[in-house]
Amino acid sequence: MRILIVDNGFIPVHLYGGTQRVIWGLGKELAKMGHIVTFLVKKGSYCDFATVLHIDENIPIVDQIKPQYDIVHFNFQPERIEHFRLPYIITMHGNRNDTVQLDKNTVFVSKNHAQRFSSEAYVYNGLDWEEYAKPDLGLKRMYFHFLGKASWRIKNVQGAIDVVSCMKKERLAVLGGVRFNIKMGVRFTFSLKVTFRGMVGGEEKYRWLNGSKGLVFPVRWHEPFGLAIIESLYYGCPVFGTPYGSLPELVNSDVGFLSDKGKVLEQAMVHWDQYDPKNCHAYALEEFNSKRMALAYLSKYEIVLENRTINATNPQLKEVQQHKFLHWE
Image (spheres, rainbow, N blue to C red):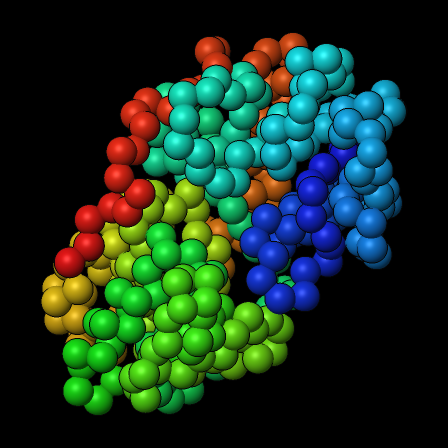
């Protein structure tokens, strides 16, 4: 099958690159299966297992795609999609808070994500674990970590800091943020129990994850999926977060604990060593790998190739969220 994967980012990923990391793994798996994969991405991108075409920013995306592909996989909803004639699906990776109708061929990234838009169509993200350093699951664990864009207040890095600051002997490594942050309204974190590492990637990120007692992830929005969760689990880290969005699906009682109360999370984190790093690792490895994701997407491709739509009706947000931040105390 000739498959075109479209995204408005760069590949390969060097630091965080959430969506781009996912589509890289997807394309790689599809190529291994014998499919002919092409990426349409931003100029400067390159790849050794697929053809790369560069987006012309002056021309609508749909007008740049030639009729030589069996299926086109968009990772955002492009303008003028109603005029597009090739079979296609659209993966929605993020959230929106309005009642705009989405395309009938929209696929979401978790069950909760789909349900909030009156849909049942979702594919869990998966990663190519072969591109990650092998974890040392017997390594001594020295601190907790936060992983994500700390400048996004919905990610609630302050909540993670507050929880760990209340624990007598614990420390927190913030991966994805800095101590002085003007994006959050000129904020400076004084606590010496917190280490800020900025946007880390590659071997440096793997080392920090491998030495952690657990991910502190008290997000205050409905997380669509959360790559930070599965990356942390892969390195043997249990997850301590809030019960929003995809988290109840991804974080079961064997690999973490969820609460919207900091004190309750703190009490659970005291017992971090009751979670088996080998179990956390095996769970991420088996459930959230790129091959499993690719097979799930192939089943979605088959639906549209049969001239059916992914959803019977246009997905639409069930309820507009009136408050920016979900409950946390």
